[in-house]
Length: 547
Image: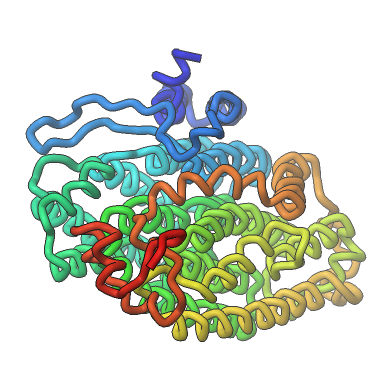
């Protein structure tokens, strides 16, 4: 496994680009060859993921494994530095799973204007960018991979999208580019404020403390990251590009966008912003929590107002990503564990919802909810699949969606040191009400589309058939994982817990503080002078000590 540890991640990143280069050598008309090359490339990357999983040392999940670091651009002090720990492993494996399933689904489902060569090449470029983002350990490298995914998704929406594809693609591009520009400025400011020596994520975290970066400067830098990552999530009120992009994107684009691309923003918070700037994170956390619960309620109410099935699912993403952001806003081990689990669960469940919506659109040539109905009569297997994933999405215990929402709500009851406990408990109540609204809009969707008798318009339509072979092959792994992670959530929590704890500042959970002390805990003093000093100012002893 020595070769794998040195080259495994690099191969996973760049093999999709090798596949693209090979596809360029074949003519556009040779569709079968392009399909085989794209699928084979994605399966080889998935096989590397399986090997990495078996070689991963779960007892050292808090440490970087398969870490590689080489000088890259000396003049700006940046390195080709990659590696994974227990926090990035689930998201990396999710990416390696989703891409081959999307290619399998595409086998006979290419949207107009067809052109499998260009379509599959864009998917592979996306694949490389997504993997690179989850393994990057240098801010410049992270930014490069973060931006690589922008153009492929833009063209996927603009060329293969719906009637308003040009508007939706341009809106997606401008919003995400604006967020990325602010994120880049924040990275550069952080680099210079921390001494201008390194872009390494761990190196910057140490340099911020050693160079005494002022609290005010940290607040501004974190604010830039908040906007950059928040647009990608997307958080309310930066979410408005998402419903249009999802509605107009081809099914494959919607699945990749929901399953993986949205996670790049939340991953940026837990991997970069919070570990490097914990003091600023404490100051911004109440506002992040506020935007998260607004997104939960707003997204749910937006779902109840929709008449298009795909647009309803898009608004549900705004609501469900709100739970992820609430878990992150608590700045606790439990909350961020819930957030990582929520990222994976949302990827599996919402990806499946978009898969089914795409198949419904292909058969009925519409996603207008009032025109649909009777799916359980005309395509019973697809109807039951829709029912299953709807139950998972509303957070039914025993399915993956529950463990993405319930722990995040629970974590808000006891947030990290320095955060207002009463305010977060209000957030907890509001988020819990959001689960009721989720049940309302998902059950309403299921009732209108799957139950009852088919409408007269589609009653005898021979094109409305049940799930086919490609759909079963693409959907079965997701359905199985939704159930498995729902029944055995420890498969993810046990992997992420040590890594999450290692990436959080000790100051956020120092001591055994009650709610009256938590809100006045000085995270900045703790960062600069140490935990003992910060606790002494509050006349609080470290847990287990006398006095």
